[in-house]
Amino acid sequence: MENIIEINDLCKVVKNNVLLDHINLKINIPGVYGIVGRNGSGKSLLFKTISGLITPTKGSISVLGTQVSKGEFPQQFGALLDSGGFLPNYSAFDNLKLLASVKNQISDDDIKACLNFVGLDSKKTSPVKTYSLGMKQRLGIAQAIMEKPKLLILDEPMNGLDASGVKDIQKMILEYKNLGVTILLASHNESDINLLCDEVYEMDNGKLSSQKTNESVKFV
Image (cartoon, rainbow, N blue to C red; front, side):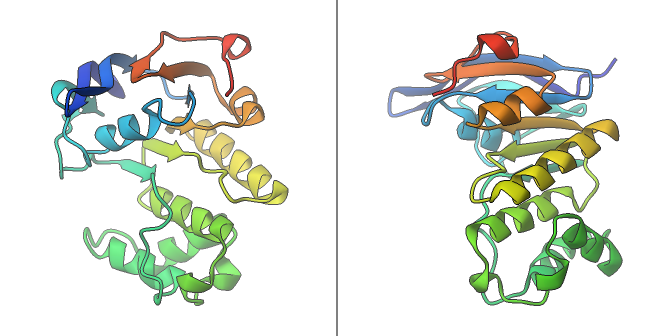
């Protein structure tokens, strides 16, 4: 069986500071995999490296059978890494339309369906600069799912959302899990991890622990 994600001896060193420390991970069964750890533990850096945005000092990453390198994004892959990268004077629809034009594989109806799915249908023509943090998070999730990925990386997707928004995103994650999508989820929220995750890993000082049960994970 082909691994969905395979990470071998991954390291990132910057000015003698070890930021990712010999990380190994193999995932070959679809599900939701939680990554927990305090701020600065390396979660976001790991996600950006898996996404091809950062080049590791050492080691290799394979996503859905394809080797990942800087500037080369994995196929059938979506990620929410930073909700601040949208053009502020463009609408939600126009931002996604611009991103979709790179591959020209996504129709206007697909974009509208994604915006509706994340609860932004009524705001799809409003400039992004008028959006709250929670609305930008929803737009970031729409961008991550619009290409119908087999692997989805979500870095703190509940940030800025109210209680209703959190429930909406939790429901979305479970729906995608039921469709066979593999999800890597970073969250500080214990209830998110307990409700959503099949397996949980913990990061500390750039090291990734072996698999843990939800009960043994420490939330900081």
